[in-house]
Amino acid sequence: MKRLFIWYYLSLKASLRRPALWGIFLLTAIIPFILASTVTAIKENKDIELYIPEDSVYANEIFESLNEMDSVMRFIRVSSSDALIQDVQDGRADTGFLFSEDFDRKFARGDNNSLISVVTSAYSSKAAVARETIFAAYYKSSSRVLLQKESEKHFPADSDSAFSHTT
Image (cartoon, rainbow, N blue to C red; front, side, top):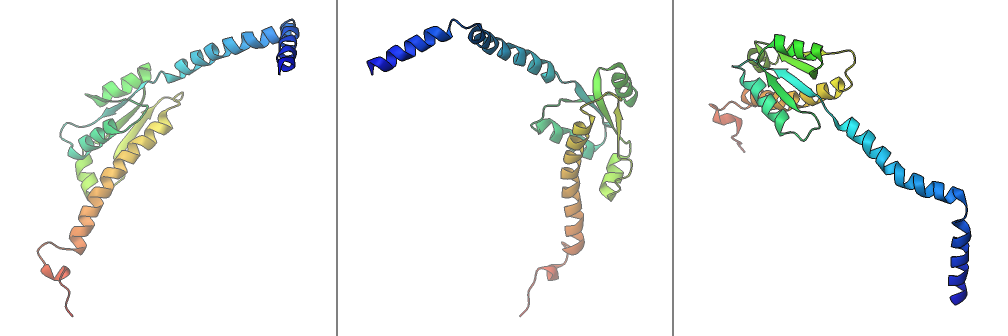
C-alpha cells in the first residue's frame, strides 16, 4: 500500500510539471463563469401585454388563469389597444394580444373567429410560445363553457325523465 501512495505522489508530481494540466485547471475554473453569464442574458424576459375590454367576464377569467399559471412569461394588462400596439412597436413588449370588444358574446356562442388578435414584431422569439400559452388558457375556459352548454342540451334540468331509469 505504501508503494501505491509513493507511485501516486511521483505520478502527480510529474503531471504538475506539464503545462497542459495547468491549462485544464484554468479552463475548469473559467468555464462556469462563462456559462453563468450566458444564462443570465437568456433569462431576461420581456412582458407579454394583453388588451382586455373592461366588461369582458370570460376574457378576465382567461387573464386570471394566465397569471395563475407557472410560466416564464409575465402577462400584463394594458388600458387600450393603441397603447399595446405602440409598446410592441417600441420594443417595450415582446408580443401583444388584443381581445375583441364583443369577446363575451362570441365566446358564449362558440364562435372562435377573430376573438383574439396577435400583435408581434418580426424579431420576436417568444411569440409562438406566448400564443400557445394564451390559447391553452383560452381552451381551458372554452371547454368548461362548451361542457355546460352541451350538458344543458342533453340533460335538461327541468326534466326528471333524463335521469329516471325504468325496469
